[in-house]
Image (cartoon, rainbow, N blue to C red; front, side):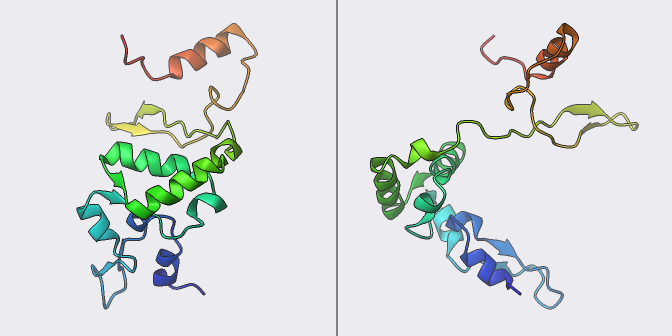
Length: 148
């Protein structure tokens, strides 16, 4: 059996390796075996191993997404590993189509907004509509265009 600390140490980035204990005797204790909180305070994304990008090149996109969404920069060594992966053209090994979760807002009986269960988006999964009705339904499920 894997302990929570072992699981946290196996994560890809230090900011993903932070948890709070739910153990009855240590409830609320911050678990941070990779010092991820320090990275968050410095606004840095740090990979935990040189193999982060070579084992799963999709992490090249994840590190960019973290940096862009949170306004963080890559830690120096992580940036070097990232550059090495790009130099080796590992970005070309990432599958061009990945399933996208599609949460559709709906009205609950109480009148509050809730979300339907996630599923593959028909727009991104390569599904071709069988009829004009289905094509119209798919278009109406798309989020509004922010450029207008």
